[in-house]
Amino acid sequence: MNQRSKGKGKGKITFFLAVLLSLSLSLTGCLAGSGGKAETEAVAAVTGTSEGDSTENSAENSTEEGTGESAGKNTGDSTEGNTGDDTEENTENISQDAAYEWSTENPFTTNSNCSFRKAQTSADGEGIYYFNTTLRYYDCESGKSSVLCSQQGCSHTDATCVAWQGDAESVGVWNGLWYAVVADEESVSLRSTDPADNSREIIVKTTLPDDTSYCTVSQLYFSHSYIYYTISVFTETEVDYGDVSGMREDVEGVILVQVNLEEGTSRELTFEDCREITFLGGCDSSFAMIYTGVNTEEEPFLSVEEYYAEQGAVEEDYAGESYFNYESEYEYTHREQELRLYEIDTDSYELLTTDYVIASDLGRTCYGDVIAYVTRDKETGASDIWLYDLLTGQHVCLLQTDNIMEYRLEDGKVICNQKLESREYSFWYIDIYTGAVRQIANQGASDYERFSPDLETKDYFVTASDAVPLILRKSDYYADDYENISGIS
Image (cartoon, rainbow, N blue to C red; front, side, top):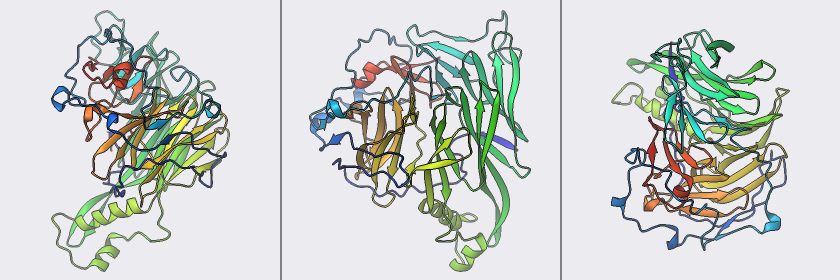
């Protein structure tokens, strides 16, 4: 069996058939889904777009996203400029008496710190842990990095080195210990390493089903004294496509592992009919996740034999081409995504909304104890950005617009991108404390983000999805200045 790093982890192409609508940012009151916990209220308004929302910087003065062409430049000389909390003429701040006081503690020390497989913010918010085969630390202000091993003459090439984690699927740091998820042909394990003496211990070992062909493992999510990660299990079977045969891979289910680090206990939630689990965030008493499944009740899914019997003979470039397309479209049109709130002490959950929820892979979805999520109508593209306070149950619709495609929650703001009728994109952020909405100029680029904040330190944003993590001062990001992007070496 092979182990693969988590991409989307479904082994199938999903058709994104969202209807593209024009940029129409009129805000009205939001109604909670039928599973909503609390009365909701729209807190931000956008009345349209203006020419002043984008800069006139020429394309030749910009650098390609993620290339690291500015690596090595001193980023410490930038001045603290625009904080991003001011608004343009086309936006409104909510009144002070309507402002919400979210129960957000310091996100660097209390909650929602995930490893992003390759990078993680340190607990004090001053630096970054990052991982290739060894665990390293990067100080954002000095620009210096170091392997977290103090042994003289160490080659850092095997487990005799405390920093070596080369067999890991994902690595994270929490309360002085280092954690890694490792996989073999039969199981997936969570391992802890004490850097003081390089003692290593298997905390949890999850045995995979006998018919597993391979599995994918998510990054580690740290929430207060808990660790969460998911294991997606796949099988491969040989099927006949008319006169030829081929291999078919299927998601057989997802396992969510929850580990209580204080008590040394763990539990596994197994979802056999699930396509994917997206962990959003947790507190001491509960956690939120998006459950992705496929509804086959209203229109049954056809087997290979049933499909070709219905379609008749079909000329294809490769085995099962038309069936593969049918399967992918069926997966999208019949997909259901539920936002579930689980009580930690029980196996019970409640639906926070019955609307279709977008699962985002871009970055964090939890800030302190507040999670962000997006609902979207698959036919019209109408999208709502929501906030939910895990501690108080406060539920707020932050913004209504069209075709929000991806989002993340960084620096107290929901940063999102929106697909336009022209098939281009516009980029926005909404302050979760004031409701202020602002378009990101993005140096005029409408086909990609100039810089994508995947996580943050106190003063910097980090793009962790590249082979080499990149950093940029928050003040530069808000000022639409990308000249000082630096690569972490």
